[in-house]
Length: 300
Image (cartoon, rainbow, N blue to C red; front, top):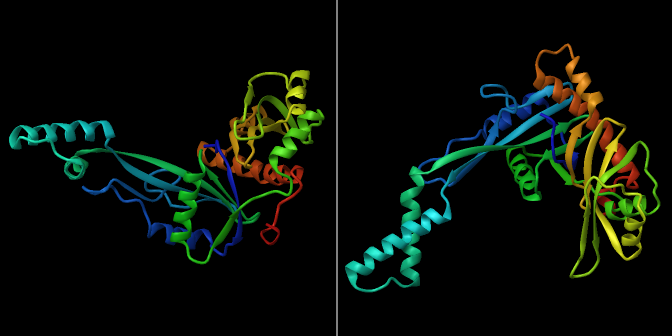
């Protein structure tokens, strides 16, 4: 259950225990969509149905926001709307106008919604109560904001801020490639994206390509900045660092997989969470350190 994408937040106020958090999340549990609901959201167990809402390993907590959404494609709504409009035209002798078409469409949506299938998805978050990290596994800022917003709604008296660094990832990544200078304990891998400045930004992507080439140096000298860079931390975890400090394509490497395989714990879920939280607790401070340190709220 390793996180694939990391949005990194600093907990600026957190006084919850796993027990108090469990009680508060349980009051906002996910409910199934009602007949006229397009979407619902609420907390679910990170591990399995019937398990606690807060999965705990030491001072590391795992929570999951569940989302249930009705599948009602716009093409289906439009198809039924056109059919209803044609019925009106044949019966009344005139084509419905724009206002009436809107009313027909709304009526069709209300009629189809109770019969639509619902699918469930989740957004996971890891809370390190010792290091004061909140890390959301989300592919987009909107998804990360959805979990954070629901957490703030469910738990009074907490606060957090998206982590920023004193040196921007773009400046740092561009310097690492232009100077062929790997910041230990990190190494640069073989994927990157470079983008020129300006309104019509030209973009160049390299995949499985040596990044110590003259070609890449020329792109940088020509005014392109590095906006994505594949890296490995301590030969343990690989990832792609983005210009907004989002960390994507996180993957444990062989040494971590071997630890998981030889673990005495029979529960693979517990093992993976313990290993993931243990490694990320060391990776995140190291990453922020090579970016000049964390930019505090007062300095932002």
